[in-house]
Image 1 (cartoon, rainbow over the protein chains, first blue to last red):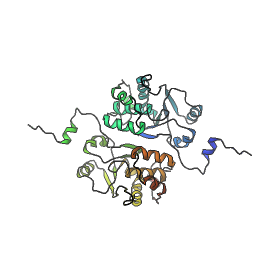
Image 2: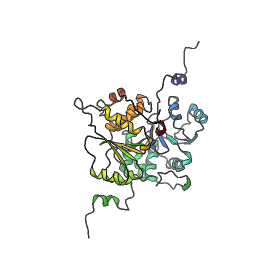
Image 3: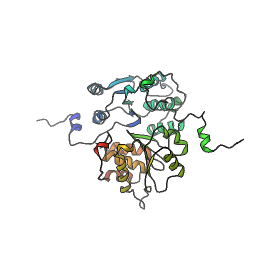
Image 4: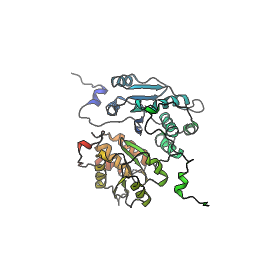
Length: 180
Length: 180
């Protein structure tokens, strides 16, 4: 007789029908989702999205449980090492952002989940850069959206988005429909 | 020679390439967007979404300019009269929410934009009801999402979402892929 359930079993109980999206989960545009770092409790929800790939912006390795889950589900992981911006010592890394955008201009990677740890700052910068460079949103709209998730701790992220530029290569055959 | 441009011409200048989404615009899930009341400045952005319909939760008639724009673009408007919740005098109207959800369980209406005036409270209640009833999200996730847009002025909206229930009819043939 076992009296202690593992965390996984606890959340997998068939009578628990609720789905739990990751922290700060949202749909960005067709084919793209954003969030904080997924936990095992979020896996049943994420499996419904039928993800083809994950973009992770983080300085550490992904948790083993996430890597194994992605592998089981045929999800390709693009990990771009990027520290959280901490001025004046750590700045946002334009190369990591450009590399992540390069994944995003190829719809064969869709649906893709882009996540950082909290889903606020690094992923907010990535979404902002995408809105500006690929979708030509106005800055007012970009900053509004950034602020909905970042809630006051902007540091220099919005300045970064405003000046960010990158020379992205893409095959028009596989370009997302929302690319302008 | 004309020295005064109309508002429409001003925003239509070809050198102004930026797109301006409506206030509090976001993608809810495949086929569904949310926002505040669109203004003419937002029309070029909205036209890219190729909307089939609009759900408007508001107590007043839609602005004529919006009705004409929708008609020109073949967009069907579903207007459900609903006042903003002002306790203790005005409560959220479960019938309006249920009627709006009825539009949402038929993917032939997609892509659909659901909007109120600010895109915070009424549309937040509609999205919350949808997350709960149709997508089986956990309450924690629903309230998080509601709060991202409503920013502190919740009144009794989240309690409404928690107790809301409706008997929705739908044809499985036209059910959205995310319906559980």
